[in-house]
Amino acid sequence: MSVLQRFEKRLEGLVEGAFAKVFKGVVHPVEILNAMQREAEAHKAILAGGRTLVPNRYVIDLSPYDHSRLAPYAAALAQELAQSQAEFIGEQAWTVYGDVIVEIERGEGLDTGMFRVTAEVYTGGEVAPVSAPGYDAGPPAYPAYDQGGGYGPPPGHGGGTRNVRLVSGDGRTYPLQMGSTVIGRGDQANLRLPDVGISRRHARLDFDGGQVVLTDLGSTNGTMVNGQRVSAVALNPGDMIQLGTTTLTFRVDG
Image (cartoon, rainbow, N blue to C red; front, side, top):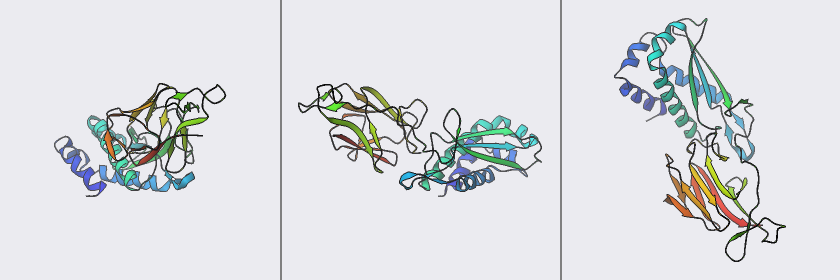
């Protein structure tokens, strides 16, 4: 079943067919989703490592008449559109920054049955250029691994010389800091990854100087370590962490 077919099926049961009545003879939600997909396609940007970044924020302008008719269902429709667009982006193996956002607004000057879709890369505070890298790894820190089995002080402070870090499949490195590091797509995550399969607050890494513990934060798609779904686990060097379609390897080396 295609994204459009799944979208239509969810709409059918959303408000007992009210959408069919609202949109009869005027603009239809499927047309809007089609336009959103075209906007994503039109604004693709190739990032380092061969990833493709597309917009994550879509503003739908409806005519004043259509907007007034839709008002009771606008929030529900925006949520369904966002979910379907995220599914479409995921199927294309494209990348977004944070969550897919859909906003429905009143478009002055639009005739009944007409609508306008604008798309942009939204980073949570300001609009970013489509060529933006789409992630924020946070400030680097370099705790080190001690030969005795614990994690010692940073290099130059009398400890070991090995770094504790996560390495992505495309070679990006994310050094771990003492304390807690939240991995996710949302603004509250310390390590933000542009993967539609990752939740806003997906998992947490707790580093106490002796070990690193990975905890799933009730994510939608779960967290895997070495192919096994986990709720909480202490990591060992070389462990493979899977979140969404992203693989991170836990490294303890120099």
